[in-house]
Image (cartoon, rainbow, N blue to C red; front, side, top):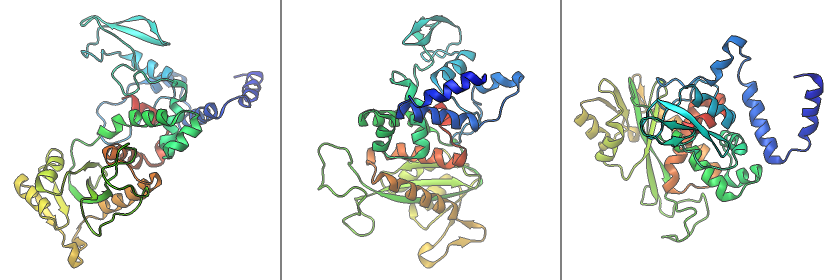
Length: 342
């Protein structure tokens, strides 16, 4: 960019709205986070994400910074979202998006069809919303930052987190630590409560575990692959439903002394190390549950900012934290937007 154009760009910043400034800020952060590509490699930024990467991890690609980036990536290998056919042709444009027609099934689509971002408006603010997810701020702060209605911020949050919610590892291997953590049952946002209202983020009315507490199972191997699930109860069947499909048969399961873990391990014929925490047994040789307990602690600390989460949406927030925790400081708005589009 020549000097005169750059000064014009700087001058125009003063005329931007707060929402536009947020989007500009997220775009600049994403651009600074990735190295300057060589000219011969310039196209690589739009290369499709590696389909072979393990689930439950953040993509290694730099993400997408706009709908134009999404369309450019999709155009490299367009696939029909209706029949998965690859024999497609360009078919006019609609609402500013390139449409395609699938020859096998004759249906039309665009780069957003069949994704959580389909039919969402105000695309120019999507990157700013992705940055709000990176920042982990409340819905009211999102609405104020982007100058949108609170219901819009709510709808966008849950659309953007549909894919991260389901992005879990297919396999936990080696030493697998498992433990439960608990959250207060919440009907936050419900028009008709089934119980007396309490202060948001308040404490349970009954001491210890009770029907006011919702169990969440966290399982994590020593490589950091993490899965989680909201449990209906602490029964062996509930534990089996979560761990059965993902814990490798050669793994060693480490847990506390809850009978449900023992029953699952025996039925699955998996080696099991049971720690008697009530007797002060925190480790048995190299086996412990400190990694999963540390994750539980980070999750609880992260969740406090929301002053309670509706139980029906708890799985969505678990996915959000799982994505944030796995990426750490490398999580960016452009990667978050790419994850929402997947």
